Structure formats: structure tokens, C-alpha cells
Amino acid sequence: MTWIAPEVERPEGSLVAPEPELLAGYLNFYRTTLLHKCAGLTAEQLATRPSSPSNLSLLGLIRHATKVERIWFRIFFTADNPAEPVFDPTLGKDADFELVDAANAQTEYENLIAEWALSDQAAAGRPLDTRFTFRGEPSSLRMIYIHLIGEYARHCGHADLLRQQLDGSTGA
Image (cartoon, rainbow, N blue to C red):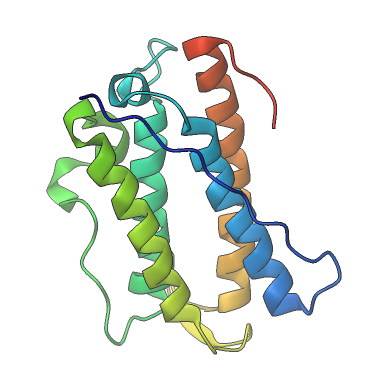
């Protein structure tokens, strides 16, 4: 049986919550929006690169989001006890997009969801002003949330275009 990406329920967050809840809510909305764009597609469709010569595929975006979550929350932010990179650095900086395999789609999808939980654990109970060092400069948990909201929003736009090219679906 061919694996098909499941339907995803996107959270409805408060528009007036305190900043920590508001930022986490927006991040979760965009996280689930990426998977919403994949819902109903087969593993083969997720791995398809419909815009040659671009290396973008929905599965590549899933893999990229996993890498980005790990880098920001569990490598940079928790530098005192960092996680290993998602992909072997010797594979190149675009391994997340280049090395997609439909046979691994379900595992990659589940890895992203698991990484979200680990990212949330890394940030849990930490004030937004919690500092860490990024490339020799001070940074904060607030910056991670803002950066990842922008990262996901940009890639959800890519996902819209990829999905439309795959099966004509458009919209939310």
C-alpha cells in the first residue's frame, strides 16, 4: 500500500495572547500549514520536483524544516548540550533538498513532527529574552521564533506553488 500524507488540523491561536503564546501559536500555525499543503498526496508526489531545474519538492521542504528546527532550537539555542545535525554535513548543504526518496516519505514526515516536539521542549519555560550566541553575536529565543515564522511562511508559499503544479490544488 502506498503511504499518503494525512489530513492536518491547523491550530487556531489567539490574536491577543501574551507574546510567548502568540509567537508559539504563529509558529505552530505555519508548521501545520506546511503539512496541510502535503495532505492527500502520495509519497511519490511528495518527492516529485515539478519545477525543473529547481531542486524543490514538498518532501525536500519537510526535510529542510526538520533540519532548520534542529539547527535553531537544539544546536544553536541549546549549545551547552547540542543535538547532532539531521544530515551528515559531508553530504553538502542542500542534502535536505537533493537526497529525497519517496520510500522514506512517511519516516521523514514523522521525523518533522518529532522534531517539533523536541524544539518545543528546548524552548519550554524559557523567557523569550533567553540568550545564546549565534556566529559570535548574542541572540535570543524571540529571534528564533521570528526567524522560523518567516522561514515557514516563505516555504509555505513554495509549497503552494509545488502543490498547484502537482495536482492543481490551490488555497489555504
